[in-house]
Length: 457
Image 1 (cartoon, rainbow, N blue to C red):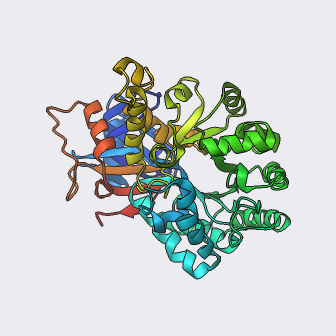
Image 2 (image 1 turned 90 degrees about the vertical axis):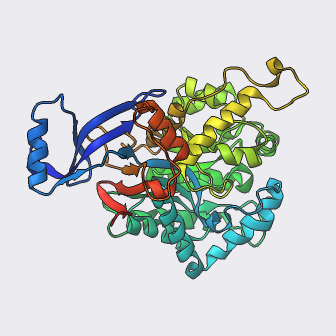
Image 3 (image 1 turned 45 degrees about the vertical axis):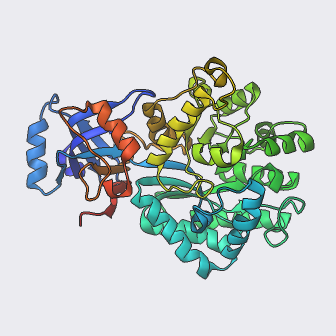
């Protein structure tokens, strides 16, 4: 590396999780970023030339120094967001899923037929996620092409790494008549959407990608699923969908197809290395084997599972099987637009599963022993795991990874964080940041080396 290759550099404390279940803390790291927004090097005072490089970078105005209360951390990856549901976040979460969908979700999503309505809604969603530290987001849009392309344009304009899908819903027996598409037209619209996103001006680095998005098995006819599988093969697109989210969804697939969601998606050409399966509560051993063999990924959405899934995902077992798995907020099946909060939810979710809830049973019979996960594992899912799921080199500070990063300040104004250096070990500090980080603590956000949020300006 020569210094003329460096666009800018950041010097300070750094946290990341190269190994699942562990972390690395560097008290003084120099991260150099090239003109394409990728990491050139990560060095410490153990490396030769460290001090000289700092001096030269500072002299040329290329160095950003962090304060003692600031930490450089990887950008967060949200694997499951319903962007058009952002206006309803926090509404109706005490309802059964069917009522919540019929009373709130489907009527709201239908409004996105009007692009003038969609534009400010999508801008607010993307701005909010970026401000909370989400550098990469995998979005469900709606069945409407124009508005779905608007979401992709919004990600590109605001600088978020976006994976955007126009939803497909063509089964008249399962979808409301006011929010339904024709099978042939829906497939044609999906192909046009893919082409439109790929052709967006300024998207040459593919910051924004189209995603094939069957809403879930019950919303799509077999013809639609098969056609989407063909588009996936033709364009080598990412795929996202809901998978075995509830007893009803699982039973629907078994009743109508005689097989699980995972088996259906695989048969239709929709289970690939670039597939993200949201929820995945009721997975069989065969399902797990198929997911692992294809390299597909699971989006764990712990808080929305508590509201609507009627069961807990087997996160411990999925991690132990080394399946690709990351985290999703599932806006607005859960109302909080922060993947840091989702890390906390994932730990809580596993603890409730391990301890159980039925007070009429003895403690030894109440829960599922050995099912808890750690904060470090949840944070790994939110960063490295998410990067694996989107098949993108993000989530770590290492050469040739994109510089998708956050500057977190534990002494930000009006903060809930209280770090005491003489009492808190590096692990203590990381766990506090995961559990207590709020929007105000996220001071700067970088995506592909570009600063897209600066709250200190």
